[in-house]
Image (cartoon, rainbow, N blue to C red; front, side, top):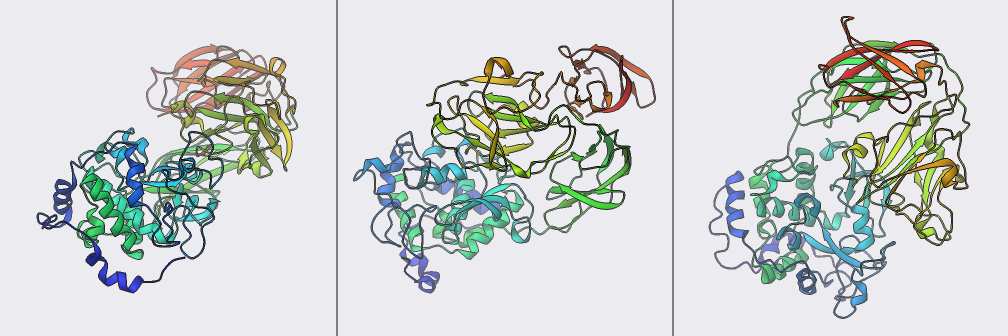
Length: 618
């Protein structure tokens, strides 16, 4: 139970701190000069090693403030206003509480070491990896839910811990405006603690920070922070002042590391170095809008991205002058749910996180094709990747001939081939006719997977599957397709392998027929992710449904999703023929490395007719 002494602490915080005499004597400037002085004061601290963190926690992270029982104080599980849902006893007294290298599939099993600044951004190097000023004890499961996500203000949570810490998209308004992707938000009691850990980190490691890539950082060693996240941290620092717990923790770490967090000893230093950012500048107008690749239900649009002093966060897409949808994609989107044989004209505006918007882009128009049905009646898995590290991906194909709303579909994992399914990953959005939907683990290092992802999921279920975890596709919570055999006892049927659905398969199957329905490839084979070629009559003879992929492209090649032989002629925008090729279902790549940047017309010619499509090389 929390003891209420806020007003007392507000005026007497510094009196409790055991700051060594003269420690901050050289900190007499302001702005970034002050930050550099603090760096000189706190650099060169004692590195006690990664294992030494647990020893530090014996004095730095005991609960002598809430339950006041000496258990491990975990910011992600502590309930300041009541009893904790679970507690951890310090490891020497109960070593079973500490991370055992396995388990941690729910809260309350183990605790481990949480890097408030993800260790992946500094390649797990020392002394950063072992610095107790920002590496704290945390429940192992909650730690995994936070993953490497930035800290922010959650709009609608997709996961919440037992103490109210939550994960979800950032609330893109107010002091948190400027970022709309997934963030993690701690409870109010510890927001200031986390903010001051960030201020410490960018000061202690200011000589290295410009080399770290992370959404919360801006790539400079002085300012250090992306402006959106600076505003968030400043707000948290202000609303949650330094507590006695922080002061005691700072003293305990100093006794171990011989350096201090200056923003706990002197909270006023934060305001002397950084100030909140206000943006009143509009983004530039988006340009070069092109509508292309029509189907009976959808049209792709591409454009040259706008620029902004703080950053563009989304685009409003207008069809025939009326707002239709908003997209966070940087320079491309697909308008779906359209009517066949209908002309549509597109424009768009850019928006930043402070509510500023650009003027309209240019207008471009395109007509949808003739609507026709496909050979399948339902969605199904078309590719499965279980690669090295977190290279994990699932691809779903739509051969129905219609746009499919994904809101009734979900994916579940049968962990270790056990007797139950994990919690579902509920899908959203639409999948166009003849298109695929790619889901990847957000920590996947492979650039091809990252580039083709329609949905990235943090390193949590079901995208933590291994070769012994069957995967199911569900519609209205009814299993319709499956990779693996449910309750199979955990055999490694798909370890270090890529499965690709044979192009003769016409629908889902709740029985996993490996030989009959799937082709197997070596680990990390991802060259075909993002497209699926079918030999079935999904308008295979209707050239309108053939895709040029990727489009737009920065690569030296594109692929043509065809099951028939095609002659390809490419013209520049002035009508000059610049390239001719022949492609088949097995040899479907075209080398365009010699083409300059710009828009081209691609004529596809077969025994069934011909069609012209647009291609953009960036």
